[in-house]
Length: 301
Image 1 (cartoon, one colour):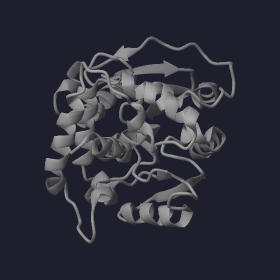
Image 2 (image 1 turned 135 degrees about the vertical axis):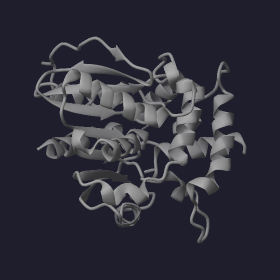
Image 3 (image 1 turned 180 degrees about the horizontal axis):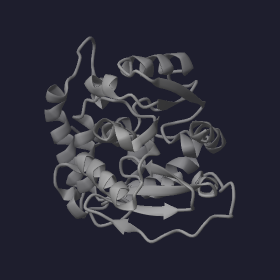
Image 4 (image 1 turned 45 degrees about the horizontal axis):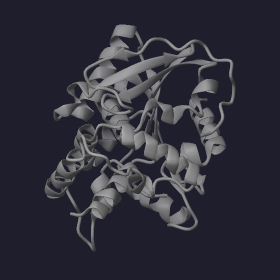
């Protein structure tokens, strides 16, 4: 695999179908100190009913900065960040088990803080982690918003009529993990990794800066786990309401084709709705911040 294949795969993992706002308010409660755990850290913002936000692959908690100010005026917003992203130390994320670690740390945190149940919003890999959390701890999730993520990423690597499985994709995922991890300690241009993830140049500039700060060893392992995790068989057991946010672009696949694809991937879900964002890439919160804020507001109602 060459650099172009790796870059394309990174983009696809973060964006199952490829497709910063100014804060809505400056009246925000004081941010509390960061709480660090083995696999994640959490910062609480504001006060009120709880809400957890989980970013995606190689992304910092800053990905939510366009919605957190207004959310913090009525919610206790818990901003999750994976250790090793945003320049943080990797913690336990240099070993296998990053996604399971996110689920475990989040459950432990909610228990310690006395948070019985809460809505969760997850973007990309964070959406997959949210699904895993809902499967493992259904009593702790009020409802889940999944922003542009699939229950099994590898369907995007299928060619012809083949149907990939976690086992069949594992050798490819392993090679990609090792090649991404090999970037550690070396300069690299993250712009190629994010080229297909947003429509606006300013969005891609922001994303490239975020990706460059992520530890490639953590990015590689998290990518590997994302690629080899298939939650489709578990969808039917998840009873909480699921909202899947689907960005689309008229210059790529178009609305109907994109929504149809997502509906097929989530066909096993029992309580699900789809909301589309017009003319947006994978980082829809950057490309269409107003539309994204409206969707989040509706979800929380």
